[in-house]
Length: 243
Image (tube, rainbow, N blue to C red; front, side, top):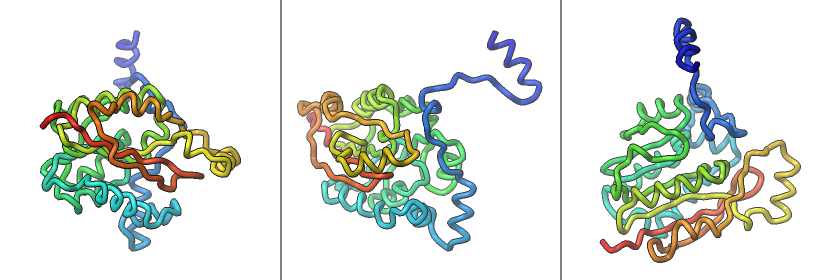
């Protein structure tokens, strides 16, 4: 039946596709075209423009500085993978910080994926919202993600964790943030409840440490950053497999 429908839709350049779990969420991400035009008119980089629009001025640099202090950028010319690069605000700074030998990017918003590919020296991989299928086993020195696990469905987060374990080298670093129980203190919870935002997903720390066990990964550090109506918590792990 699907083939028949697609053959008909093909006459008008349309196609029926399976709706995956990533698309079935509460977020409508900002337009690449509108954002780039807005940044140009404001005389700002896209990173600076987005920070200004989201009332997060300086937050990107703070996160990168914390990553550096925790040793994430020790290796010269590492292989890097980013999940959900979005506007490229972290990509820009990571590339400047460590001059990666190879930078793989998984971004589900096609307009941003196209813009990033034209803007930065990266490899844009096909993103399905839950896997890193185009990245080889044991091939990545730094894998990082920002503002992604805060809204992903629970099982998609765990699927990504399995993929992260697969692609990271011995001695590599894993960096991501999410909303844990600690992020929802009374003040933050009240702000979320009084907003119209329903997309945040809580990711209990138990499952994080189940997927990044101390036998394979060492927790290098934690820190909080402003996110939405409250905050998110960053985890920085190091792959401790024997090199």
